[in-house]
Amino acid sequence: MAELKFEIMETIAVLSESPKGWTKELNLISWNGRDPKYDIRDWAPDHEKMGKGVTLSKEDVLNLKTALSNMDEI
Image (cartoon, rainbow, N blue to C red; front, side, top):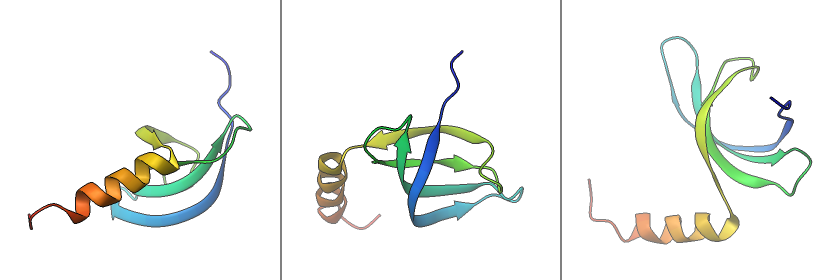
């Protein structure tokens, strides 16, 4: 399996933290030297390990923002 390279360009928000110290974060990340994308996933405290996540384009994030603002209260 090829090595996955990433650079966290900006941490936008820490959404939650588990008792073991893992955090669910919204970051702007460059994957394998490509243009940065928005990314939501779990990270180990040292950012050495990561969980499965979802990567979003700017358009995806704007559509999500609109959808969330149109939701009734949860």
